[in-house]
Image (cartoon, rainbow, N blue to C red; front, side):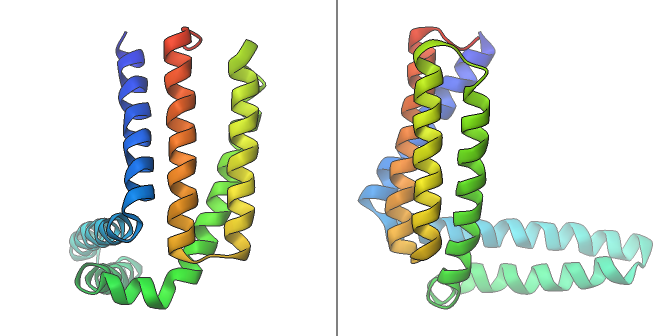
Amino acid sequence: MEKKLLKLLTSLAFIFLGIMLLLHPNSVTTVLVIALGVIALGYAIINGLQFFKTRTPLTGIIAAVLACIGLVLVLQPVLKLNIYDKIFGICLAVILVLTGVLLIKESFSRTGNTKLIGMVVGALVILIGLVTLFNPSLSFLSLLMGLGCLGLGAMQLYEIISGASE
């Protein structure tokens, strides 16, 4: 029962994120960049504390680099979007292609309609990743990611409703 509830919440979160990415792509992208900055700052603090315990130079360097990246992302998210949107888009495109391949691989272990839906969603995620690879602008990427999140959320919701997942 807990697994079904978790899957339901995850599917609803994907659907919500997809709708938000479609309606407000710039705002959501800015929030995601700031969140990445906060995460980088958190890891910088953890590595900094570890550096003071172990005195390992590599952890000190990692802490300093993460702190710089985190500060830039938190304080200048729009600047980050303008300068690094191509690099970020290409990295996300590779992640999308790999996610699509894993979705197709996972769908072979399913039965019935969920197998076909998994294969179709996986192929669409790969297609979105490939299109993004050749056009890695964040506004276009936000639109495609919104559609992808809606598809993933809908697929998980369908599995829950049809009782295919345990």
